[in-house]
Length: 594
Image: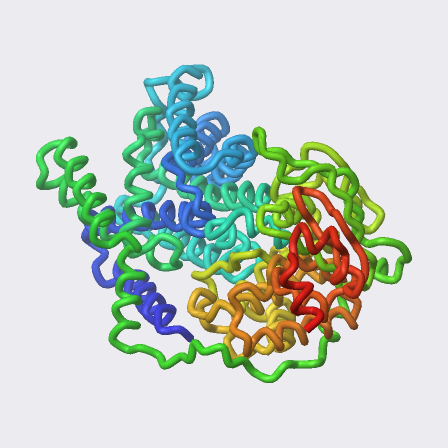
């Protein structure tokens, strides 16, 4: 068991026994249960804003929604608010899904502003919907049904239970391909879409997941307060405290939001007791936020972990040496679809064009990739090769033309759907998720959009085992637990290839696979491509290393000025006058004769 889990378990035991050994102190119990409430909110917020990187400043809205749901049901049915508190979570999820389907189309500052607008809109609705919410007069609930001798102890354990469930829920998400997909979105949303991650669905699910336990806690909180009104239930300061707690402890970590919530709650309580007025409390919270941004931008836990690693460095070799290449590529072949035996071209590009203002990057281009081939696409810089790759994979929309993959028109499909159909790509400059481990990078791709795939275990089980097998295929199995950003450039190229193979693609687009690669790894990369091609994977390769292209690829297509000017076997391309004039030049002719 990890050290952090042991410490967390010991802390939980101490919190469980505290009311038993000190039952007659209602004030400390009240302070601690408010710490639990803030920790529930910060841990839930961490799912959408820590894992996925979409910062929400309106998350206290879900606490208000849960509070009003439980209070209104209790008021009209006579049922105790504690028993209907889960319905507060359901209300929060429904609102999160409906709102997320719209607001998650934006990103960055726009998303932050819209979440604040949602919070304020909820306050306005609660104020003006008198018939349901009693407006600004608020809702008063009955006092707790248990004896006053128990004081705050039932609420203490209720919030502690919700906190444990929230942390376990967050930990489970982090273990799944759903969690690795969220981190991939945070690191590079475009790359995440290219490896089959349905970014739209995952963001909406994350937003909904981040709201449920806050909504449930809102139902319990309404009963604890026994009174709620719109201003108090939908306060912007509540959202600021949530964000501050996660930032103090460490956004994107499991226990950071909990630790941050405890610290912020204690400071907030101290400011309330000794500050004299609410303005002082706001000032203190603002100062803490400034200090965190300036001196602990990563948060407390990540900063402490970094300091520990500096004092206890681990010897790691970052050379271009890799392990023995595994020739057992059955792990790739086993998931290739039956359509890999279908006759005819695998990819057909017809009349595709793309303009950027007055610049024509791709001009009515045609390209055919035969099934089972290693097809090359060469040409001078600026000829439109990478732009064509982006059009084929859906990274950018085309202006005209058609793209047919495996007999299906795909030019209007989103990038992740093209990945699910068996179309994968690597990038000219590697775009690994560098804060994730090598194994997590390879597990992150989602070969289909099924729920069971998203919820599969990414740490252990079949998906992780397949990822390790693919790392063995490219000779990097020994580096599975290293941070991807710590590898050499050539090793990152191999990891990106293994990552794409996780999609079980029929066609892999390689954008300059030899660019920047140490010659000691270039032979390994070529060997892997040939081995995978023998097992049924088709390749389309953009490369400037002409000797490599002529020895590896057949046929070769030559691009110039946004269109294909020549296509054929390497021997003919080598002597084609059009190619020599447009790309290779007279020096190549002289070298070839020599």
